[in-house]
Image (cartoon, rainbow, N blue to C red; front, side, top):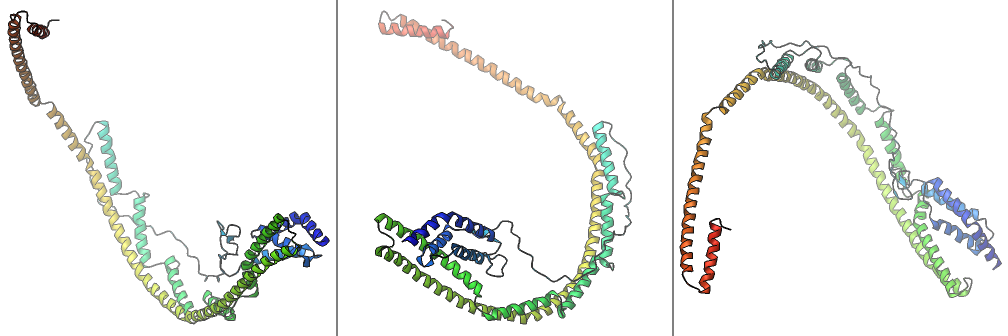
Amino acid sequence: MAEIDLQQEMIDRDRGEWEKQLRASAADRGVSYDPSDLEGVVRQVSYGSNAGKDPLEFIKHQQNIYSQRAAPTSHRQYDSQGPAYNQTTQQLNPGYSPAPMQRPAPMQMPAPSVQAPPTASVQSPPTVQSVGAQFSDPLSKAVEQFAQQQAQRLETPPADSGQAQLEAALRALSSRLQAPEANSGQAQLEAALRSFASSQQTPQAGSGQAQLEQQLQQIAQQFQQGGYTPAEMEILQTQAIDPLERLRTARMQQVMLELSKRGIDPQSGVGMSMLADVDRQFDQQRTVLQRDVAGKAADERSSRMLKSLELLSGLAGTQGTRQANAVNAFGQLAGQENTRQAGSVNALGQLAGTENQRRDQAFQYRTVPYNLGQTAFQNARQVANDNDPLRLAGPYAQLAGMQDQRSQFQQNFDQRNQQFQQGMQLDYDRLNAGGGDSFWAGMADVLDSILRRGGGGQ
């Protein structure tokens, strides 16, 4: 019991320092720290069989596990254990750029020299005789002058204008495509295609194709051995067993807590039996996991053997690919000549099109003075039509007719109103002559009120 008390006292005293060491080690190796890592060290130290051992030994063992986690498990750029992934979040690191693949030095080609295209002479179309100024008002005169200037500029573009330079460039492009210069990019492209076709037929010793075939042979030999390497097996077992060990630790803590609540000494027979049951259950699961890892290793051996055969088949077909590339390069070389000729024809067609477009635009500007005159004439004619007295006779006649209709309506209304009042007066007189009958007297009062209101009385 004294040894156990001393071990527990050491654990309570140094637990915080051990955690700092484990966190620092995990951070240095770029992997995540888990509280179960510390619990595993504490559990090893607490075992009675490990009494007297230096705790640093168990910490170093956990640090070795961190190193194994940090090591990549394959040759792929985006390996789950490689630098591309954050071991804490298990996500691809943003902005990660994989290391560039080692490629052989490209075939040295002479740098193309860029020369300015030869200046082509611009042939101006026949000059159209300008019509003199036709307008005197400032606005129309300004529009007319602007249209004449634009037409002149389009008919004969200045030598430094973009239009003249475009047409000169199209002429130079057509000439250069028909017969490319010796140091031009097109000539160097065709020379490069010839060189590439030759290199594909017989790859040079230091060329990329030769290095590719050599690498295929080396990788195929490595895969022929099959199975995981010892380091890969260690990592697989660590990845499979570590979660189980964390569960074991958690379960042990639960059992210890339960024993404490029940007042049972962990070193008693009942306590030791419950702890042993937990170890036995997790040992069985550990055995199952180890068997699964061994099965994966056997499957990996078969997979790698098949991969070796696949690589050897690819190596056997690389010569046929090289020959096909050579044929394709010669085909591209032949197509380049046809493309050059078609490009020359296209440039000449664009040249003809831009000249026609210039002349069409110049014609549109030449018609501006005529359109201005037509517009002025139409506006003057519209003003004259708006001031014609005959156009006002119709509305005036309609207004006179409406006034006559209104006068006739008023006369009819006055006549009907007079007849109505006369009839009401007769009825009133008759009612007054009816004597003292209260009903008829009341009706007389009503009619009297109506007549007063109708006749303007109060």
